[in-house]
Image (cartoon, protein in one colour):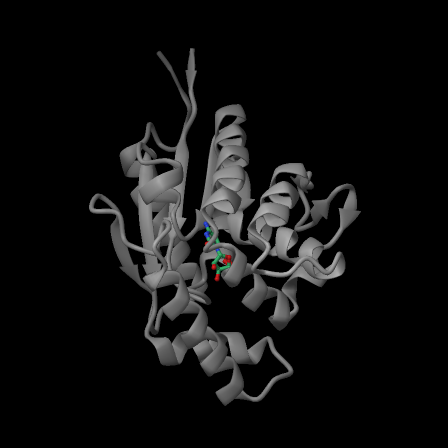
Length: 224
Ligand code: C5P
């Protein structure tokens, strides 16, 4: 049997998880899974269909019924067949995703989908609870972080909003993600902490690839 490799990358907002996870997946030939995009897709569907963030039952249904796909070889995220890659990046969707991600039944449904993806292929999966909840036995766990100022500067450069507004949004989202009862953002005890403050993406990528290759047979799936 071929042993699947699971690389779990967790950390706060704008720590560079998506960029790095995507690059690493492409280098190693694994599937990249952006779990934040899954929470965002359900939040988008809820906003479009006017389901309130307090309506736990309907939100659970949406999470269960949502067909979320990552188009291989592209950055596209599909919700029920529609390309929502841009729509899910709106700031109000980030806030709504953080709200609905507090609901245990929503998390249960999405975690179920995430585990199924990890069973089909070797993955680099990034989010908030991958090493702690989704794949407690992940092959490699990384907790990616950076100083709050640097994280909000990075996000502000990609945004049309004033820097103070972006900083406040990130701060509020991290607070909510760290303090919720259900699967809060925590560093798994066996995760490697990587502080990316002041480092270039290339430098972090090299460090992460070395870590993964050291802990696997040079990144290759093994046959048991
Ligand atoms: O990573 P991203 O910023 O796209 O995630 C959006 C929101 O989805 C996060 O603020 C968090 O509330 C939620 N999320 C989560 N668990 C994950 C991934 C994202 O709760 N594994």
